[in-house]
Image (cartoon, rainbow, N blue to C red):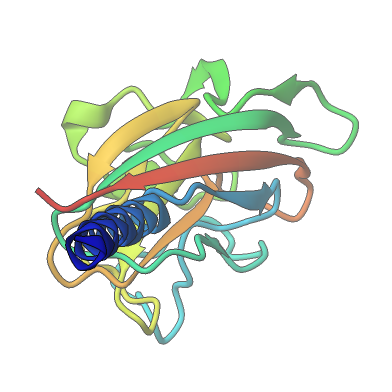
Length: 190
């Protein structure tokens, strides 16, 4: 009789351990990360990595890269806070950028286009200093077209993407300041 009782206890413990392990795997998948994006961050590196996507003076810092292992079909929910400036001592703007300055496919003060020139026109308008992102392979080369994030966005990871990089939609970066925090919560591939 005690042998049957012990067997039921062992079965219950095994089931509970299985549930705990399944839950641990699920919570690891949905781990939230935060990326700090300096006001000087360019969304992608042009020379040697993306020479077909030139923009601005290329005078900024490297893109901010999310510390995530990406899987095609995974959904990323992003929320951004903080502020940046476009000139030293100038006004600051939230991650949605300077609302009255639409960049889209125009040239900036440098005579070069903004990163937004490579975005789908369905995303327009895209503003000056708006937070933008691009999916890249493991070497920083683009996988798909860049896109605006602004203050928040949910997007699906495309096939071939190994990283997501963040920067600002600007053409002159060296005089920018401030910082944006991007919180990213991944969900399982569908």
